Length: 242
Length: 218
Image (cartoon, rainbow over all chains, first blue to last red; front, side):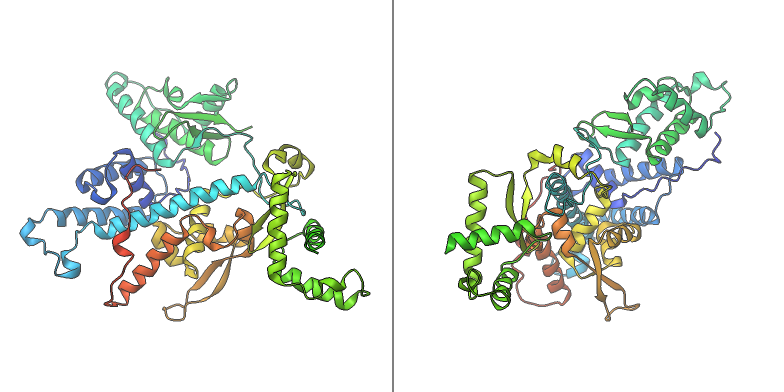
């Protein structure tokens, strides 16, 4: 794979976002996080992000270490875990993280509601005419997709491609991100919208999947394309920005 | 007299380019009485704030029930006339200027944190969000939604502290910071935390009341 082309997608979402995403996706209780399972998943996403050469913030690695630490403490037999009377030491090792996640989740909910208020206000005008907000999408029934949704979808495609890899070893990998960008734009010349999976219909190898995905990320960054979802964890649609 | 007062207030609101408070209006009534010829203005010289508020409430109901194309709403501590949402398609055309884009999710999250935990430093915001917020802070400052409100002298490096602006309330159509979604709950948590940090031995009543969110609510 030609990896000299580095995609500089700023991952605005942090480790807490990833954890909340996994908790929701796995449908587990935030107050009783199955630390082993979530840690495994977290590490998987982290390695996918590294595979893609995404600029992973250092915070992601710090969180990985925290998860590992909690996991190791949880492995201690019950009688070695100090009980309630002794303050800090006796706490569930997950507690600090849970507290942080719950608080952050609430702020995220506040943010969503503020976003809705902003949208309402965008339609209300005052004397000075400054609602101050531009509604740039006339109607957006689809929700925007988080980077983790994209990575999850990418992982699906990648797994399928890996299964096929055996049969395609002979192909020389000559794909560059720039080529793939052109190709995606060409594919989309007659469509305002296609399904995420359709981008990978013709891809033969793991390497090609990776390059195609990086091209997609670059097009999103360049605001040529947008990705949307009709429901949480639903199918991802790729939409042309006009 | 109430009727008259209400009309004057309506005219003020119509002409104003910002939210007006009852207090401001009272001052205007007094000033007008000083400067103008006595006559029409004189009866309103000593109008009380409570009377103005009553008139505002009455006007608000009137605009709702008639109903007019605009409403009277309380925003950022004041009162303001504002068009109803259904007229947006035409008003947008009429006022088509280059206006700033809507805020991104990271910006909204950061704003939520600043709104409910101000004054707060970048480091403390980053601790809650789990990521750096430098870029976001810059955008929010540029858009006058937040401002620097001071420095924390108790901490090494004396970090700058941020708070939300009047513009923030106007942008989201909020009466006050109490109107921020989940305000009571999220402020309470901070208070509870501070109490714990100070190792105050008294009972913290809020801690036990925290409701368990089902993990997949949202």
